[in-house]
Image (cartoon, rainbow, N blue to C red; front, side, top):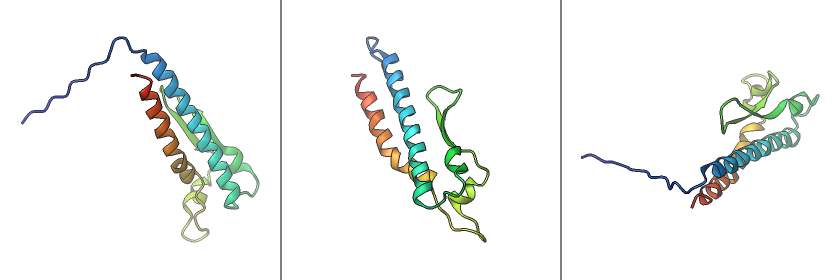
Length: 116
């Protein structure tokens, strides 16, 4: 059994407007993840010198519609996931990402609605 799917784009749609709105939504979500991760660092008492707090940053990449949120300190994974011998996990980045995921999904849905 063959299955074919055909997608047609209305030539009157302003796709560039969609792309700009999607880029704005992505940028906003990346900064909200950064903000949430920093708040989690404070809330879970991972603040010692402030280096990890300052090292969490939302950054655009060279690829279109792509942002990353990084934690630049080399020990960040040990704080996020814990270690076998030394410390329990104090997640800060993944909870911030999960918290923002629903907001980002809604923003993308709003962008898609602008196409109709």
